[in-house]
Amino acid sequence: MSERALKIFFRRLSLCVAVICFLGTAVPHAVVAEDSVDSPVPPLSPPDAPPSPSTQSITASAQRIDVIDFKEMDVADVLKVISQKSGINIVAGNNVTGRVTLYLKDVDVRDVLNIIAMSNDLAFAEKDNLIHVMTGADYERNYGRKFFKKTDRVIQKLIYIHVIDVLPLLERMKSAAGTIIADDKTNTIVLVDMPAGIEEMQAFLKEVDVPRTTDVIELNYSRAEDIAEKINPILTPNVGTIRFDKRSNKISVTDIPNKLEEISRVVHAFDVKEREVAIEARIVQVILNDRSRMGIDWQGIVEEYHDLKLIGNFDVLGANDKKGELSVGTLAQDNYEAMIQALTEYGTTNNLSNPHIIAVNNQEAKILVGSSEPYVTSTTTTPASGPTTIAESINFIEVGVKLYVTPTIHKDGYVTMKIKPEVSSVTKTITTGNNNTIPVVETSEAETTVIVKDGVTIIIGGLIKDEKIHTDKKVPVLGDIPILGTLFRSKDHSLRKTELVIFLTPRIISGDSPVADTAMTASPASPAP
Image (cartoon, rainbow, N blue to C red; front, side, top):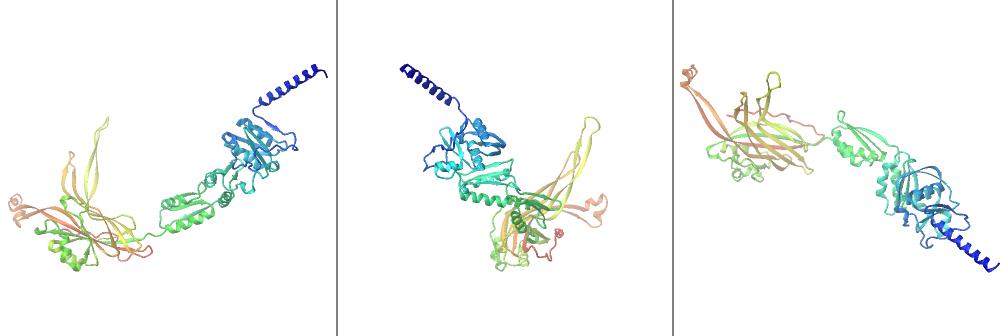
């Protein structure tokens, strides 16, 4: 060959190389099939540090795909679609085969490649912006280890529960290196994690992926809505459900069998008859004499009558200033008669009422010794056309002695008593423009909490009020004569002070014990002298 011919040959050879290099850079994303298995791809990382699906950091992990929907598609075609959607170069060996069925939303490329590799015994490695997909055998030959360990991945098809329901729970259970992929279409879940994490998640799926059953529980003592509130936090998340019916007082629980057993134990623990407290109350009115216009000296009673064994503090507890201060104490034993005798030194005693009530543990009970005073209100309606109408309605207001008691039973035989006494009376009336009479009620109230042993009597004093006494005086026979009788009649107006003393004796009743010798209603009040 002449020198000139050699120059032409090398010039053409250089041009071909340049064209090939240009074409190689002009194809940004491609799925390329390798020509031969006999020329294995050289390792992309040193053999002593091979990449793995759980630890390698690939460029693809930053790329997400909104929707993946394949049904029995050839794996080579699937890789091509992934390359096009993600903008990442993917090279596949010619012995990479298999079929892929996937439906995934908003996933990164790494997760997609992981599940494809798991399903078809494939592997992949990444270098620069190129992902090399190969068989698991090629990967092991190139890198000296398996791409996946058997304990690193589990593909599990769920039967009774939906993957979407358990996915949030599994996400919280996996380690930082773990990956969980859910296939909504096939109800299959792929677990990739450390062996301990895989074991824990498999145990959880085994427990929850069972037929759900429904129990209908009829409650005896508790309200259905209260029990439902207690059970709801222990239901299997996203699996268990609970409904209740107020009318029949039943609850319907749907969950896995193990959880239903736990729920049954909880219901049994709470659906019991509440413990109750039988409260014996005595309300005594003391009409104060002239020496005791400021009220009963409770401290003096304690000092003088040591046999009463009166204990406790007598603090001011927020009664109205003009009504005096509230005094609270306890009787160490039943010395009611001795206490009444002590009160006679301060005035005339009058037993207003001796009611007995039953109070459920932690629930308020009310005692009323008094009356409901009626009054009339009018409502005037003036329409745009037609006559004006006046509608009257009768209302009632409670006056007298009201006592609110909330007991709390303790295991050691003590009872906490939250006590709120209230004393009210009609002091005057107001006449409205429609000639309706509205009563004006004056109220004295206080509130305290006392802890006493079962059977110990609580004493509440200091509820002082002024009472206006109107007395009609007349001469017999002459005072009844019309017109002239006014000369033989007169009206006397006086003011007296009274103090109410309340005795409360709580007695604990077990949930199964019958109530004996206990009345549910208050005795009628005796008229004041």
